[in-house]
Amino acid sequence: MCGWSAVEYAVTKNANVVGLLLTGADCDNLGRGGSRKAKAIEMRERNCALVVVGNEILSGKVQDSNAFFAAREFRKMGVALSRIATIPDDLAIIAEEVSYCSRHFDFVITSGGVGPTHDDMTMEGVAMAFKRRLVMHPKLEGLIREHFKERSLESGLKMAEVPEGAVLNDGGDIRFPTVQIENVYVLPGIPQLFEAKLLALKSRFATDPYFMRAIYTSTGEGNIAEHLNDCVRNFPELMLGSYPRIGDPEYRVKLTLESKNPEYLERAFRHLMGLLPSEVVVKTE
Image (cartoon, rainbow, N blue to C red; front, side, top):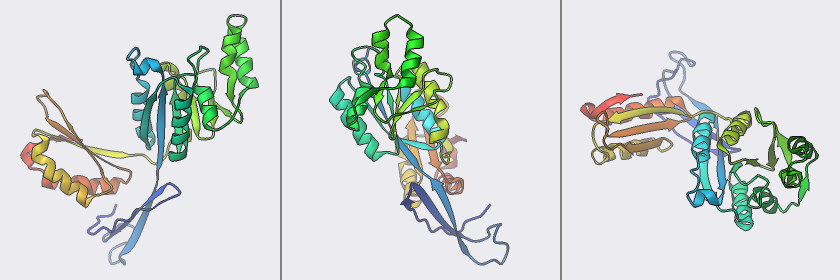
């Protein structure tokens, strides 16, 4: 472990890698009396977007839980969920949103709109986004025929149609695989199915993890804002969150400090703890 007395912080974002250039003394791997050297720490960065499709979400008929689940799981994977879009069952809007997200993020997850009914338009919208035609996938067709037998087979076969060139990924505990076209993964909207399929894809998405520390205070944000501003000025790559709590007798504000570099995080944590009056700190994690 190095005790950094001075830090030169450089960030590069080539090939989705963030590099931290830390310069300090008394580092174990240099030895006493060793020369001052720069230690480069490279961390892989990935971001993604979630496109939630469904009039039922926008009209309040159904409460979406997939966005919360995805945000929590992607954080565990070290992936930054940078955009969540909730859009209606409209082909043009689906195509436009998927096309935008595919161009601007490392990968995209869609939720909903993949069933056998008239308002299930996601697969066709994704095909439009990539200017591909819908084709019957033989493996999916076989699974659909086996599943539906003779009941509602015609409508069921709609779920075997995929954008031309799509590939299938293992669905984990779910029998039906997940359709992928380019960097877009098409998932069902039913929470139990969405969650199982997302977890089955986990190994594809996981990258260097985030590390987090938390500070709970007994005072309001207004009394500590200057200290938070000081911290982010000195640690510009720190993800610092401030979350007020109303009516909790234990604390009034929870502060979270996050970074992919644990050493940088600890330095920022110690810096902020040094700024906050000791009497307002309830506990730390």
